Length: 193
Image (cartoon, rainbow, N blue to C red):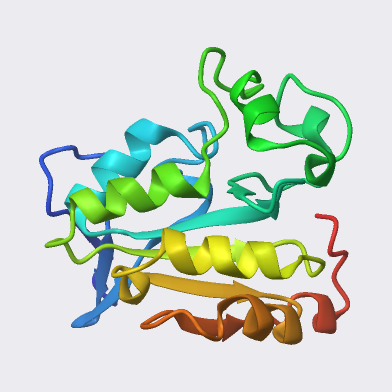
């Protein structure tokens, strides 16, 4: 019989695994939507902090706001994840600041600038953050904002998405930023899920 996979963590929190060891190989675990555990609320700042300390592979979804900035939300409509209503792309950062996450009352939606600031504060750590681009429609303003936000820390991020052209247009000129393609839509899956 094969040995059971072992959990390994670089922090004392037993609920913060970053690697599974199996058959002598290490497989990094991805904290999808910054969740350590499936029951955690998405995009929680507390998990971001723990993940950065643990050196986890973190993932967030990225939506463009009307002002060109970015927020960590999965769905195109605010009501799916926040106390707001309407399209995420129709509101600005100030409006986002007045909302709360549905699964975590009192928690505000996480802006990309906040996430980048947290990564910058842990510049010595091994954690990597995957930015899963959900919008293919953006202006030059968004490209400039992304480049400025990730300046000096681009190598700590991966920008990926189902629209390779959009990923390349948005992140192609950010120094150190790795780009990736997600074939989810090409496999016949519903991109809205």
